[in-house]
Length: 482
Image (tube, rainbow, N blue to C red; front, side):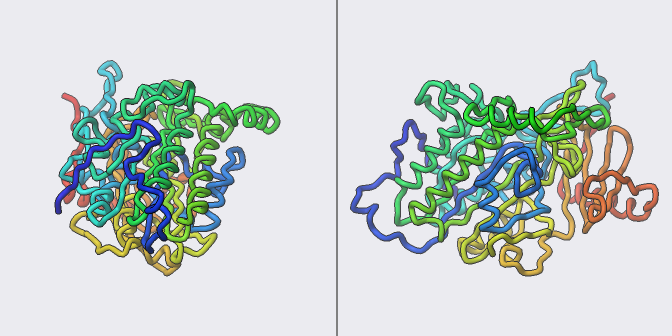
């Protein structure tokens, strides 16, 4: 397997795939295209179709009503970069040696952390074969817009199989914020005070219009929303401020989470407006697929890179609430790793269908190959499996066991630990406290009732399973400070 490295950077709405009108008018061949929406820090309960009553997402809800909603979809990590690597490669973050957000954070010495910092990679190795590499080598045009956060020069999207990169750099937050000037060398400023998501959406639509019509495409729109800084989408924020004023008469007290605090209710107008901005964008892309006659042969995937930011240190709370799930981004409770996922695959998924089977972010790679009628590459996507049976509505269990390894400290007040879900049982190890927690997710989705003391045999079995997996993967374990 080789990698085709093409470096094309957009500087305007004039796309390199634009052809003559005569070519554009030719009927398009039958092939499977892909549009992949990846939202940054979007919580499992942040969408109307996943239960939110404060946020408003009619376009994403429409996508769910025409495709399949996954209620037990998991990010491979509670933070962004590792999950993004897992989507790109079909490999677990431990296997690609990206287990923390890039470049990660270190606890200050005065906070007396028990463990030393665990070093991992600050980029996705170019030797890793991505879904863009694989589709590109099979004739796909590949377009990336938005947040990358998997490395800088030599490790950008155009070094990892994408023909075009618009806005993808090493940063996790938009360098200039959500309004121009963007201060992003891969996103030249166009209009003063332009909104970032609107710009990325415009460019994505222009790509679909100007691409080569005789080849399939992968459009990967990776939003910077709804990551901090929380800056309101001005076109919608007043609506949510009025809604909050009329809906809430009393403050909702925060929820204690070890050394952190969690927001207990979705009531942040600024954050809600940022979710709405994503929803408007999704609606525009879906409408463009219809207008361009592409909807019937384009698979649409929608996912988040981790749970919503709910829990923080220093008497603060995050901008969203993931209830009924516990905690959020940075934590291995369900609120940190369970994500909203929707897939619409024409001719495969039934409208308004639901899959409750646990699936992983590693599964996108093999599933997309399957949908494109390309051969599986298990030597590449070693930790992902195709979800084609689930998409077809067949009874399937892609994973009997899922694992998470997050041996780092995080600003959400998380301390090093790991977790395993086996069937409906989930075990979480907290290395900082020498503690273990056990939950029955079928009956306790909010992880409120720790059953570890009542089930010592199950605890021992799951700890052994987790430790054996960590050893087999060569997981970097935290080492106590001297």
